[in-house]
Length: 438
Image (tube, rainbow, N blue to C red; front, side):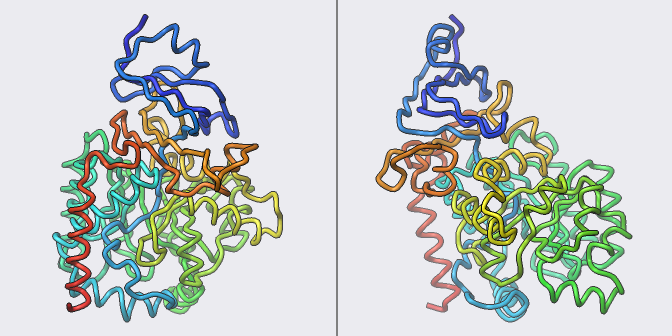
């Protein structure tokens, strides 16, 4: 018999690839952080000798969820300025608060809180955009969560950088530091077309091509953004980015609530990726991303929560449900965005957008053991006819019991193993007192 580190015996395994498949009575063997076998339990029992065996008799085992758009440190601003439209929310509340409070200490505390929340909700990877990204990277690596850290770029100075050159220099230094890290990767993160001018965007395109990393950017988030671009540049934001050479397979366009048919064709032909944030879009009344039309056009669509300040959570199970329900209403079609597709958007599609689909995003032999176990035997999730439907439409993040990243058991029976939950809560309460002026 072959020795392995761990054997996991769930009720169901939902691999995501093949699409829509559910294996009942199967087990998984994991060693050195990778999946070595998925097969009926008897085959695993007969072939492998595990050092530990984990029984999950009422659980679905799924790929770890990937939150493809976050501002992790903004968790400290949860509920700070609710029920406002985007530009008023940003210009009159969020940006002034950030100018006052954001520093390395703020980012460390907020990111720790965000990572704790994400792990407890089954998320094993997040794609972030914020100031002091080196702090985000360190917190992620220490906590054992996978992350793509945004090399932030914005036209105005901040506590992090005084200008474009400093933003780019610091970003390139961070990229070099984590070039070979097993968990942390980087992406360029110019904030949005309305906050980054042409010359810096051209520099980002050249550097992204050289380094072969993604470009993560808010685009077509609101009607106002589009109208302002037409007034200032003579074209809609996506057309401007196309002129600058940024619409490519490297582009991760976040929100995309304002899209015309020719723009969908452009995104499809360019093999660009869309990050859909349904709950943030709804809360800020930004508009509706035409997800089913994008999917029908062959565009890769992933899911993100956005930051807690505009959501107000980092709950990817909830985000999948919102995405599936909203897509049906927008398309006026109850068959739009079925449950299996919503799950794929939060796993393999997101991994493809981040360029890590050979490593994670589905449960396949040879891939990293990034796993989430979801318990489905409660009153709220019974009776059960289709485990995938139950995950999307009935389960919630409190059903997540166990999480592994690269085989490391980072959430065990609802308890974080790499983070001190009480210390994080105390830290966040301290920041809330400071921001309120207590």
